[in-house]
Length: 346
Image (cartoon, rainbow, N blue to C red):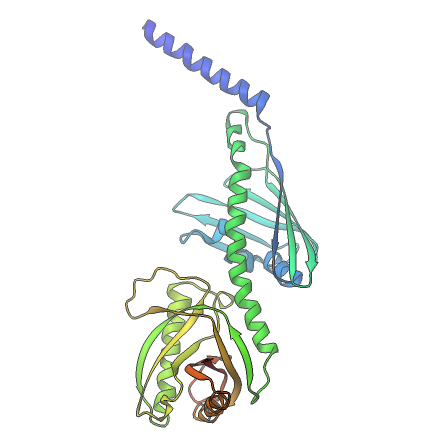
């Protein structure tokens, strides 16, 4: 009996010492600021923050869980928009609101986690460093915690900073694909040969052999586009601004063959794990390309490819594969809008 009394006294003493240390040495709430820069224009960056459907795609707090469910509430974008979320696996849930918006300058979020009545307040400021670079500053104020829970404040800032680091990497991947698509559309000049340096890509797709008869090849391409697109969007859950334009890679002069072998895929920002053996990744190294944009029937692309090959021969350049990038998704019975790129080297 005396032993239990001693234990009880020790426990009470430890709790008292813990409570005293929390009271005197740990703040009941935390305030901190985090700054980051990203190499994209302010308007494009701000739209990823004030549209909560965009925000939850790349923000690691939401995107890191495969079991989280999110409900979006009107107006979906800007002041007054809101979401509620729940993750049955981690038993986390809560609500988030945009309480204030000064377009392209500031946003104020309120985040209610679990059943907390007091929110975390997050003010975000956006500063255009240059036409192509934006500084983002987070000003965070956490809610007051009960005395015995204040130990959480030891790691709150580190946890928030880690989330921002992961989120900024995701945001960069989203914007790189979005900006690349915008730049490609803005640069279109049909039927003229240009020289471009292409960056490395990681493409998820399928290897195919198909008949080169009149309509059979294009029907086969449309079928495989739907196959790859469904896998990327449905099975992998990738959104339109997280992927590149669909691309077909093949030998430059195999349009003369009775059977055509090609790789058809969709570029992803990074390699991910896949369990379906029907699909595989193909990494494309940086290349110098002769490029021509083409619009018309799929069969008509042959003339444009021949022009690229003639240009390479005239310039005494050797050439490799031709990349057929579909600016508009291939669809049966429709003309194509594509970028033809012939990789060249000395």
